[in-house]
Length: 530
Image (cartoon, rainbow, N blue to C red; front, side):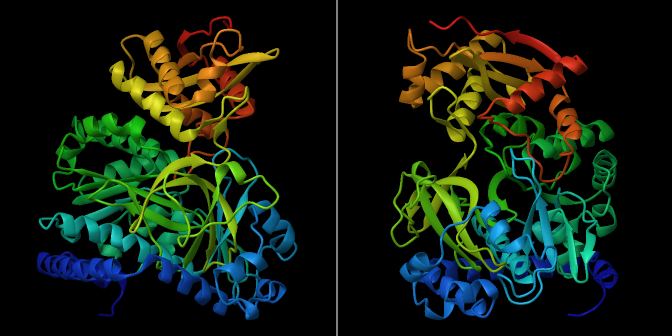
């Protein structure tokens, strides 16, 4: 059906139209899931790679790497080395920036998604093609399909789906090239058919002032029939707090009684789970994890296992390198054809946006290969090993979540990094609680004990005579991390609080901010090393 977005809004206001669309999506979901279940993941991934190579054969990158001679995965891995973003920038992107014409993908790249990652300061310009925008939609729809298939009483399309993102106000930087927040690009590329079923409207999505936008979103969404809400957990909490304050309600389900799903992603959810359950106010509302980044939509929560189901049929070819090998000169490159369960892998992608053997900076672990089910374990640079303790993000997330549960606390945000004292030192945690623990020292001790149980290197380095003191914990006043991110120019949308700082530089910056603003609270200092 054609028509303008305004016309669609008028039609979608009619319950009969919404009901018809909802029924149609239920039928389409069953078909889509059946089709996915019939696919061979390994064969599908090889076909995906060959299709990508075929499209990009005549680009500069394709000519340089003799794409015309590549006939399979092994040949691709022999011809195309893995590259970080910085290496790709120097080798291909820097000189013609911002006009990338037939460079790594056919035609001109129309969008550049701005990101600095979680811990790095330099801006990255991630290419986004219209094929990639379509790929993201193709990968996201199965997430919704699996939800409605698992819950036949779902009525998502009788209401609206609320996606909390950054500004959709993109900047034109060259003819036919715009740059900005990835969520803004997605808003621009959203199908007119879907606009009546989503929130916010484009005019509100364009708002660039994050705090004003949150206030407007809270005010305008309170009257909307929201059935799904999604975003980064810490920013969703900001929205929920403003929404409850604006309505005088105590739980989200009182504001949106038809809410079915909270979609979260970007960080590990464990420290937030109890807080979200309390704020939502209903066990029937599902919490669904997604794994999406500027490079593409990679995985979504499987309703039967609560693991992440890798999306493998939408224009992305995946490789996996054991995280321990990532910095070696010639790391072993795996793919779905020879990956193994239980190994912490760095993720490498080749995409329909012209990224080739690109190290995206995330780590995952396979829990199953058929179907491909994974757990997100952290960032390649989100490790803490200043003293040889070799902690990864997943271990730190689990320890904080466990300590919160044991001490009756609810964590809003946190950060950890090393503090050096000569040859030794300790880990400094800064935690912003929604509900403080009954005993902060016990919270600290639980974090310490959980890390020692799960990581032999940490346990060894915490042994008498080795030199790492017990960790220190400093509480932060409500709004601390929001203010710190504002100062860093990282407030809003898809920006995430840097959880782990391996160098100690960000930790020092945060501690300086706390001292300057007077937002430091109760503390448990470290003891002298044993």
